[in-house]
Image (tube, rainbow, N blue to C red; front, side, top):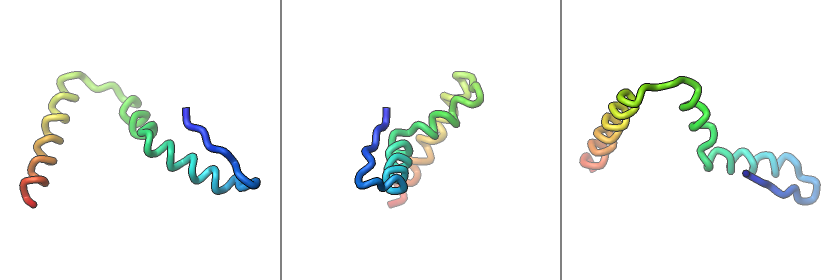
Length: 61
């Protein structure tokens, strides 16, 4: 669970920090992934394709 302490009544700053912590924890992306069911085979193919793309990017440099 993400927690943020409000200091000196600065709610806006605390809210900004909260949003940053939530984004870093990966909750929004996990929610997007779980919205639609994906068959295991399709997940596997996407994972392999993403690995190929990443490998291609690394080998360019």
